[in-house]
Length: 567
Image: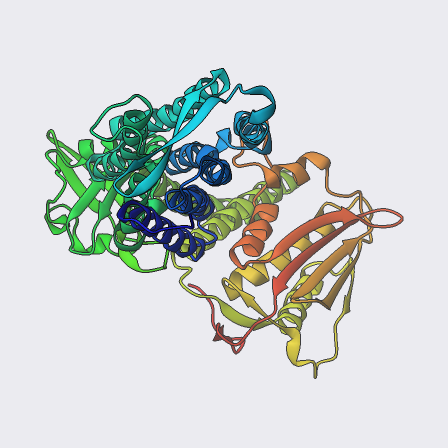
C-alpha cells in the first residue's frame, strides 16, 4: 500500500509548518542572542514532526521504522535547544561555551547512532510492530536499555531548563515574573505530553503528540517575541545588575506608570507600587538629565541627581524609560562646605595680605641698611600669595561658568604672553617660533581665554624662575599637530622634578605628596577642560619640553577678538 493522509498526520504536519514559521521569524531577530536558540528549537521540532507525519501514512513496519529513524535527530536536539533557550533567557550565558555544547550533544549523538544501527544490536528497540489509531499507523516498539538511558538524559536536561525558569520566577520582579511563568508553562507542556506517551497515560498511549505540543510552545514563544518582546528581557540578569546598584532605578512604561523598581528606589519612595503614576513620584526635572530631586523620607531630606534614558525593545521601539537616581546629599553638602571655606579663605587672605603689603611698603620707605632687604623679601612673598589667590579665584569662576568654549588665536595669545614675559624677565632669552600669520587654522577652542593665557604664562614663568643659570633660554613654538594645535615651551634648565610630574595624574594632593604651587595644575585643568592634552618631556641636552595641545576651533565656539576677559 502507498502513503495515505489522516487527521493525525494533518495535525502533525501543521505543527511542523508552525515550527518552521516561528524558526524563520526568530532568525530575523538577529543579532538578538535569543534568535539562534529559539530558531534551533523550532527547526528541531520541525525535523521531528515532518518524518513523524510521513510515518503516520504508511502501513508496513519497514516504512514506518525508516521514517521514525529520520525523526530522531530532531527528537534528541529539541530538549537541548530548550535548555539553551532557558539559560539565555535567564542570563546564564556564561554556562554556554563550545565545550558545553559538545558535552550536551554526546548522548544525542549516541542515540541517533543507536537508532540507525539497532538491527545489529537491538539495544534501542528490542522489537517493532505497528498499530492503527484513528486512520494513522503508529509504531509500537519494545524498548531496549539504550532507549531508557537516552530518554532519562533528555528528560533531565528538559527538567533542568524548567528549574532555570523556576529560578527566574522566584528572583524576578512582578513584571518579569509573569513572563517567566508563561515561558515555564510553554516548556512544561511538551514534556508532560511526552511523559504521557512514554508511560501509557491517556486514551491513546501509542500516539506521540509531542510535536503538536512543541508547536503550541512555539506559538507561545512567537507571542512573546512579536507582541510582548519577552525574549529581549533577561530577568535574572536584570536582578543581579539593577538590584545590586547603589542608585535608585525606576522603570516607567509608555503610559507613564511605574513598571518596575529596585530596592533602593523602594527605600527612596516609601510606598511606591507597580502601576502607580510616575508623576506622583518624579518631578518634571527628572525627565531629562540635570537638576535635583529633593525627597523627604522619615523626617530626613535627601537630594538625588536624576538621569533618564529611553527604554527600547529589540526593534528599537521606545517602550518606556529608565530613571536612575544618584544620592548626592553628602556630596552636595561637602561641595557647599568646600566652596564656602575656599571663598572665605581666599577673600580673607587677599584682604589681609593687601593690608600687610601696605604696611610693608610703608616700612620699606622708612627702613635703612640691611633691614630693607628683609622687607623686600616679605613684600615679594606676600605678592606671590595674592597672585595665588587671584589665580585660584579665576580657576573657580571658570569651572563654575564653563557652559561653552571660546575661540582664540594661538599665535596672538603667545605673542601677548611672550611680550609680557620679556618685560618681566629682561635677563631671559625668550624666543618665539610661530606659523605663518595667514594660516587660518591657528585658532583653538579653549574653555576660557584668560585661563589659556595664564597657562602659557605659567609655563614660561616656571621655565625662567626655576632656572639655575643667570641667563635662562626659553623657546616657545606654535605648530599644528593633526586636529590639535600645540604650544611647546622648551627650556635648558634643570627640568621639572619627577614628583611634580606624577602629581598631575593623582586624584588629589596629600600632605606627603603635593605640588609646589598652582602653576602646573592650572595648565593641566586648561588642557582637560578644553578637551586638549598636556605632556611633559625632556629637552636635549638638558631641560624640559612642556606641550599644551588644544583642539582646532570648528567654528561652533564663540569667537574672541582679543578683548574679552573673565572678571
